[in-house]
Image (cartoon, rainbow, N blue to C red; front, side):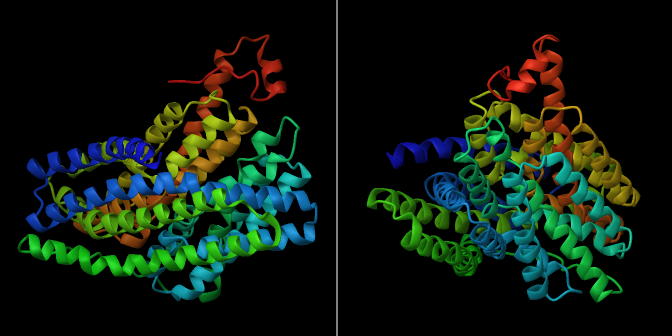
Length: 504
C-alpha cells in the first residue's frame, strides 16, 4: 500500500521540482554561467529535494494530519476552556520551536540573540493560536479578527526601526512551514469536526492566517526593546568541490546536522502526542502503527529536503542572483525571477497539504489545481515586485501597506471560505523553498547592484506571503461573477454545498 502511494508522491515531486531544475540549467548554459561546483551541488540537491518531498508529503498525511485532527477533536469535546487554551498555547509554542525555517531566519538576524528571537516568536504563535481557537469557539468572523490583528500590526510597525520591518514580515511567513502547516491545519479540522453548523468547514481554515500575525508583532516588539542600530546579514557560502568525492563529502557532512535538527523538531510534538494518547485518546494499535510509519517518513523526508535545499539550492540561488545582477541589462532579473517564482511554489511541501485539505473540505468545489495555479500567479507577481525593490531601493512599506489594504478590503466582497483559504495560503506559500532559494536569489542580485541586503532584499518572504491573499480572493470574485444573480444569495447562505466547481 505504501509503495503505491510513494510512487504517486514521487510523480508529484518530479512535476514540482523538474521545472525549476530546467530553468536554472537553461540560465546556466546561456546568460548566467555557474561554476561546476555550484551546478553539481544544485543538481544533487535537486535529487534530494525530490526524494524528500516524496517521503514528507506521504508522512504528513499518515502522521501529522492524523495527530492534529485527533488532538483537536478530543480537546474540543472536553468543552473546558481551562484545558483547551493552555494546551493550544503549548501546541503553538512547541510546533514553532520545531520549525526549521525559523532557525534559518534567527541566524541571519544578528542584532537579536537567536534564542530570544525563537522563543519570543514561538510565544507569539502560541498566543495567536489561542486567539484563533477562541474565535472559532465564540463564532467571531475571521474578517473581524484579521482587521483587528493587522490594524495593531501596522500601528506598531510605524514605531519600529526601518531595518526590522522586512524581517518582521518575513518572520510571519517562515514560521508557517512544513512542520507547522500540516499539524495546525489538521488541528483546526479536528476542532471544527464536532460541530454540525454550516460554518464548521469555513472555520477549520484561518488558524494559519492568525498564527502568522504573532511572529510579526513579536519581532516588531523585540526591535523596540533592543533598539538595534542596524541588522546584519550573513552571506551564504558558495561550495567549492573539485570532484564527485568532494561533492559527496559536502552533503555527507551536512546530513548529521539535519538529522539532529529534525529530531529535535519532532521530539516535542511526539512527546506531547504520546502523553495525550495515554491520558485521553487511547487509539488502537493499527492507528498508532500508521502514525508511527508516517512520522518515520516525515523525519526522513524533512532531512533529505532540508539538506538538499540548504546545501544545494541556497548557494545556487545566491550565485545565480549575483550573475544575473551583474549583467548590463540587469532588468532581465525581473521576468526571470517571475518565471522561477511561478514554478517554485509547486515545490513547497506544505502547498500539497493545503491543496488536499481544501479539496476535501470543499467537496471539490475548489480544486487543488486551481488553488495551485492561483498561488503560482501570486508568487510570480510577488517575486517581480521584490526584485523591482532590489533594483530601485523602493521601500517595502510602499508595497506591503497597499497590498494588505487591498487584501483586507476584498474580504468584504468574497465568500468567507475564500478569505479563510487565502490568508492561510499566504503562510503556506512562503515556505523553505522561498527561504532557501528565492531569498538568496534576491540577496545575490542585491549584492551585485550594491544595495543594502537587509532593507532591500529582505522582504521577499513577506511579499510571497502577501500576494496569494489577493490571488485566492480573486477566485471568490470569479465565483460570484459565474454564479447566477438569483442563485448567488442562496449559494452564499448555503455555504459550500451550493458552490459551483471553480477550475481555471
